[in-house]
Image (tube, rainbow, N blue to C red; front, top):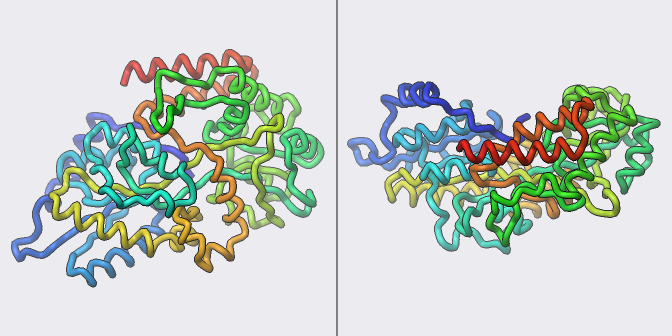
Length: 402
């Protein structure tokens, strides 16, 4: 399961998409019969898209609107080409928040209607920050996800509260996770004050990168300890880590809600991440969002906002059961489906202190340098300080080239 989408669009991709969308009806016009139509795309899982289609078509029937829901299986970045050519959707449902900056720069996001988002309705301000760029809201949160500590109850009676305890348990009973994935490891960096871009009251300063400060370096050092203590191999992957956990070979594992179904193969417990030096780990918060196309005619935008309002009420249980996605609305946490899910309550608690993935375009320059330097750290070719400093240098270089 991908936790973030890198900018991969090329001229060839744009040409391919332009060809692919030739012949599609323009977003700015309906049929000659005057029928109201609305097009929705979604990058969620197929099972979620099926539920979305069911709900959207029901709304359409009740409101005399022909709604077409299409599963978007291409790279998320590619939808920009279709949107800019007026061949894309009127409503996009299911875009990871770290892509919003790229879409916003491309001019395809309609600013959220005034009053549409009521902050008090949401589980935390973090999910609102995830859709806010330069103090303006460009999308609506629809679901969230973050990491937690998985533990095998047959191997440990209760989850460790501190990383020191976790490592000691790991030495005896096993503790694995994908330490080369920066989405997974960011909590180690943030615990003692590391950050990606400085958050100045909701506005991210991309010139101020905190991935090589003292706290961040300390996080890198903690990660290296897992290799030095022979808890994980330098070439660890999530498949290996999860496989050892589900086979009952290890007691502890770090992952997100998407791994719950597989990990029920053992007597599964889930707890908040352990503290590091007394400080809580603050993992990335991933927020799935929905946006209305700025390229659609105003009447279609109005319909899209109405449909989205309806989906906000109708989809949370489906996103939880079909996609293992946490609700962002307090009202959705009152449903029987949510209340009966013991695991999701823990993830929701962890999400309260998680840090939203940066949503500015510059974040696309972070993932590859961070991953490459983590690998160099784990295999011993770089120390913690060098890995941290090179990560920052390479991010800055990538931003210059954008």
